[in-house]
Image (cartoon, rainbow, N blue to C red; front, top):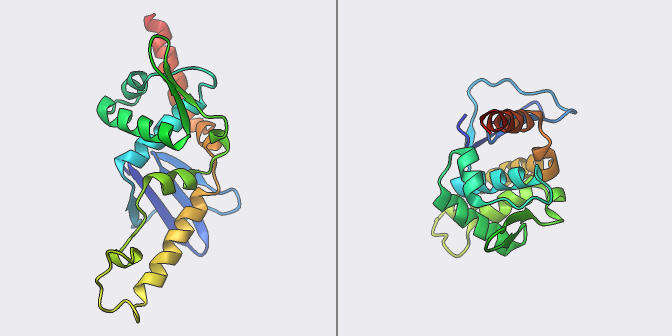
Length: 189
């Protein structure tokens, strides 16, 4: 799976998903077999937004620059800056300019549900008919596809709503990556 892929696998009411390359499985449900998964592609904007929040959550009270995060993740500074501005405007992150400036996680963001962030940063209209303003589908009144996809989208978001930003930052996979990076920079310094 790519880092921008969030895949939801469902079989016999067993759910697991991969987000940002991190595997999450509910303790209540065994992981579904990973044969022939059906991926749901999230935008880079959402991927980067979640990465920013994870990075900031791991550094409470520490001002962090977009350049530092872009370097750490190996991603575009330009795109990351756009994402940071959107997160700041929405109140998930606070920003200060100038010498000693940077980004901080807003106080309430640690308890924010991952689904909230995805809803904020994604256009979740899976089909044209999900948007009544743009809809031109002639079979909308009798279509059976739309209700199925509504349910699938709801199930996807329900899984994401089961996790907070605090839990993402606390994942052992991410912590291991952050610790390795910190150890490497300590050796160089």
